[in-house]
Amino acid sequence: MSLEAALPRPTRFSIGRALGDSIGIFARNAIWLVPGACVARAVVLLAPEPAEDGGPPDWSGLLLGDLTGALASALADAAIILGILRILRGHRASIGDMIAGIRLILPIAVATAIINLPWTALAVVDRLWESGGDTESIVRGLLVYAIALVFYVHWAVATQAIVIERIGPVAGLVRSVRLTKGRRWAIFGLTMIPFVIVMVLYAGVEMAPELGAADAWLVDALDYFISATSTAYFAVLTTILYYDLQRENEGADSGEIAHVFD
Image (cartoon, rainbow, N blue to C red):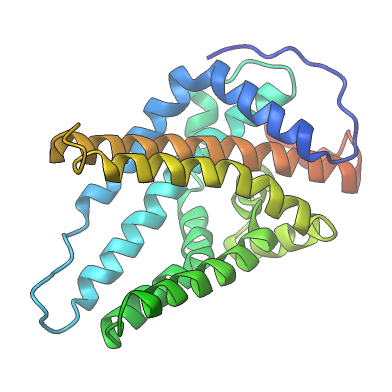
């Protein structure tokens, strides 16, 4: 794991600095970030394939799918957050940081499941009321995206608060609301830039079979890799976001960041 130079950082939040730092730190530490996220993502393989026979809704399968998705995301965040925070403080990340974060996997998973509630609601609606056509499906999807983004800009740093400050899931959500206050449009912009890039990558993978460029197994593998890589990157981005927002709101030397390494 690489060692980042400890450089003076302004305490005022900046979209450009946060985006640049996230790209730089991710690129220099991809050798452990991406494999770690790929391993965490393997949890989703435990979920059953959704039924496509038009029968009654498989509620247990839906629940298991949501739980494994939340757990996979939580595992990646738990393994990454403290290492990135240590790098931001000018030290070398270690396996111990991963282990310390993973100990908080339960509250992180609960918070992640709450943040993902709009997607759970969409899955339930899709199973109870069949879409009347492409237009209705698009409208549903756009509505859920809008609601999910409202949730996200309020709770973007909840998992970081849980891991770094060692608090529960509800307290982490509340803490995130306080830290993001006044910066939510900036968080929206900061999130949408890499999000659009990820969506373009997904679209490219989906087009591959139509172009005869890849077999189904390769498309699935690429989809898995993009998902894991984007999860790792967003864990880096939101940790930097937490770090900068905390410094802006409470000062550069807050004990809430320092105590986790004492």
